Amino acid sequence: MYISLRHNLRRLYHRLSRAALCGVAGVALLAAALLSGCETASYYTQAATGQLRILAARQPLERVIDADDTDVALQERLRLVQAIRGYASGELKLPVGDAYGAYVKLASDYPLWNVLAAPEFSLEPKRWCYPVAGCASYRGYFDREDAVAKGRQLTEEGFDVYLGPVPAYSTLGWFDDPVLSSFVNWPEDRLAGLLFHELAHRRVYIANDTKFNESFATAVSRLALPDWRRRQGMTGPAPDRTAQAQAVRQLMASARKRLEVIYDSGMEEHIMRARKQEVLARLRACYRKMSAGWPNPTRYQAYIDKTNNATLALASEYESRVPAFEELYRRSGSWEAFYEATERLGKLEKEERNLELNALAAGNQLSSRKVTGPSFDSETCMSAANMPLATAGSRSRARSTK
Image (cartoon, rainbow, N blue to C red; front, side, top):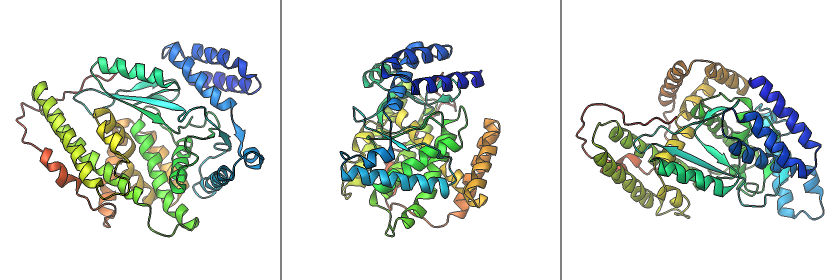
């Protein structure tokens, strides 16, 4: 089924490449018909229409750089993208191909909006399943109003919901993803980190395991950036925002630990609800205290203010397995050996895979004696939210997320 579907969609894409723009809507409807056995036709219609609109607007980087009406700042950014692509291919051994070899000026600030959800008393995200890509813990919409409507529906069903803009995403090698105006002007190291992350998805992607995929791509980005910075002459310490992002991750991990205890406590729901709000209030207070001396203390404020089970689950998806992959890279000795070892992990049954990742993470803790990152102690700050729990047995309150 997957092979046939992939073949049909590739034929669809090549037909689009030769079609006029007026044919996009019809092509999108055909894609929706091909995929409607797994999800509603309306969802795939908007997904196909939005994706094909972006693909049809691509212009090769060289053409944009050489155009007389391209401003100097954009020319410099696109040349930087070319250098990043060269590094990713030559040094990281990632399958760059023609990915990010074209540019698209979007009509809006973002190409996509993601909806994430988790039950009221669980940090296990709701998952949606898609053909070929498998199941993922997010739902993407090219139209913000569609995302808002989906978020409202999930809220009414009792889920914690987060709706956020997506400046960049990967089609996992199905198409040659372009550079978008939504992220082209990011700071140099952030732009490089983003492209390393997205290109890593083209090298290794395991169906039905978002945490594995995102942690792997995050690890590739973090492992690659120090050498990239050095080669670009960025010899000073990493920007403050790197340490700030790590501080936020640690703070959210501390909040997750406390919420997991509450959700597994067996307490009555109204008590869990009150304890949950106490932890989230303490999280916001700790962020204000932590960021007070930052040049831009409001950088993560909106995200922290909206923090709920959905955002905490998202952070876990991207971060929780990163130490394991860092340790796997250390043991592998080269990028290609690392990718092959990652692929071998991906072929294991999920339970066995997680055991292997747990062992790698434990090895990472033993080998990483040097402590880096922010000095702010998230655990100490969050300890005020660590109230004694009157447990009534150890039972999970997680609702079905299917």
